[in-house]
Amino acid sequence: MFNKEIETLPLEKLRKLQSERLVNLVNRVYKQVPFYKNQFDENGVDISKIQSIDDIHKLPFTKKTDLRDQYPFGFLTVPQDKLARIHCSSGTTGKPTVVAYSKKDLDIFSEVVARSLAAGGAKPGMKMHNSYGYGLFTGGIGIHYGAEKLGMTVVPVSVGMTDRQIRLLQDFQSEVICCTPSYAQTIAFELEKRNLSISDLNLKYAILGAEPWTDVIRKDIEDSLAVKATNIYGLSEIIGPGVSQEAYNEQGTGSYVWEDHFYPEVVDKDTGEPLPYGEEGVLVFTTLTKEAMPFLRYWTNDICSLSYDESNSRTHIKMSTIKGRADDMLIIRGVNLFHTQVEEVFKEYKQLAPNYQLIVTKEGLSDRVEVKVETNLEFQQELGYGNGFTKEDIAKNTKLVSISNKLKKNIKDTVGLSMNVTLNCYGEIPKSEGGKLKRIIDLRNS
Image 1 (tube, rainbow, N blue to C red):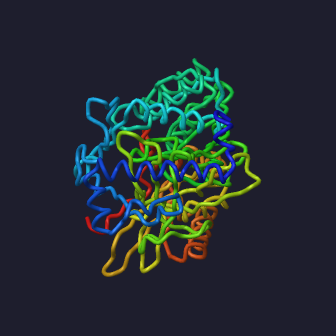
Image 2: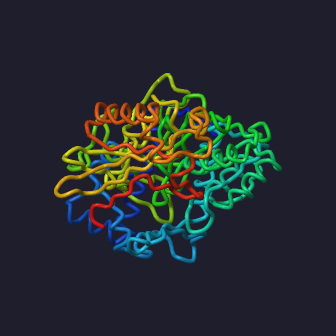
Image 3: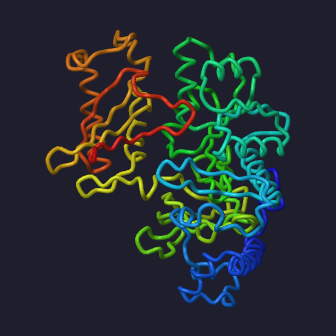
């Protein structure tokens, strides 16, 4: 552990700390952020009645539209000349969302990332190959400073240029790689395509995030790169990567939320009512310690659940794997669908490489979903299609037809929707070049 005292703090002491920090935060933003003062007054929130973390449900939510409405600096609680850094989103769907940091905020950022990397298996003295993007996106530079705080040597490769990535992994012998899950798959694909041996690399741990992924993708990455793969979670509005992290020796049980800094809730996506531990809903965060631009009950749109387990090595709460985003959920013929539900079906098929896309179209008044998924190279070679196959080959080959039909039936039985299945050759579906990979192509309104 990077900070054992805090990471194992007894729950009653953690609640006391959270309560003190929430009361201070509420009083500060009421005085310094006109948006929150108006929200409190309009919703009849008496800040004198906010006395502990148990009162947090009395506070209003903050949503991304609010950040855009207050663009650029409406949420600041410090003078602009006290800012140490400013990040923002690309603004491709409107005004960008701005996040600003004081020096204290950057120290917290580095602290929680260092905790996360340590939980993921990283140790002081190791080299970390950082394939997250540097720039306005918080990922690359956030991971970078956290790794240095942990005592690692950072290779700041950033995104893209996969040839160079592979060469540096070979030459520098980094033990840890940080990138999106889909880009880890891209690197593995290129290694296999070039007949390069995993033994030429020295990777031991892959700390992956920025997009939803499942155990199907985890197994593919672990097998192809010979690593222990864990999930790191964060979002710029809260601080960046390092809000939560999966422990490498507790895989599949959720990711620790560093709740001395970020208080999590899960609420009903329609009513906003808090949900009990274990129930899935929208994840909401309050930034208890952020100085320059704090947020109360920020609505992430990510769908997950929260739970405690006394048998865990740390006392902090865990969040489940992100099932999807509330605003990215597809409604197909009245059924709610996340792409990760389809991805889970693939784990039964050793002949498939878990690189896929869902293509959604409309025929008349009915929605149609096509699942495009790759076969793996070993299976193709076994069938005699080392250089790929055609649609005519699929129709004539009984094994390919059988897999397609079985997959179609399994998706129907598991998800409750009929979908067309198209098998693609290994390497045929677009791969990530370092950024987030788009799994869903919705053409219904095009």
